[in-house]
Length: 143
Image 1: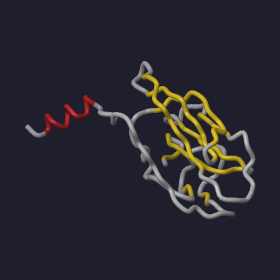
Image 2: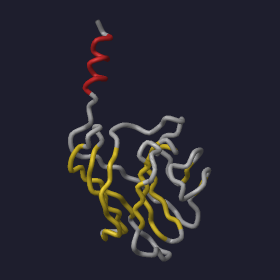
Image 3: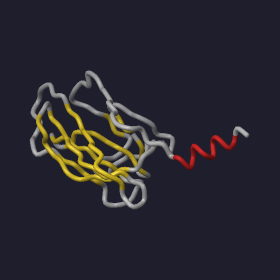
């Protein structure tokens, strides 16, 4: 989801699982690479972010874990910005990256090949982000 201006990408490259978080296009990308090589077979692949605090500019700070089945294969600290990534018209893509690659680790357009994606699930927990200033402006527009 997103583009070079910011986004998330979970992908397989050179038989390893990667999760890249591109923080608003600011280098370096936050890269999590699995410490295991994937062999042919069925897997449940995933990523988890647990918020631990806020940075000085309102960004979220936390811990990211990358999973192959139930095993943590990479982890580390990460910072995120609350919001959606669709600045350049790209939304959520499954099995491909359509236009402008989220990560410099692959080229777009790109397609997942050599396997079958049987399903995708997204789970969000915790308090939703609310931009109080934007909400106040929206409320004032009603008057």
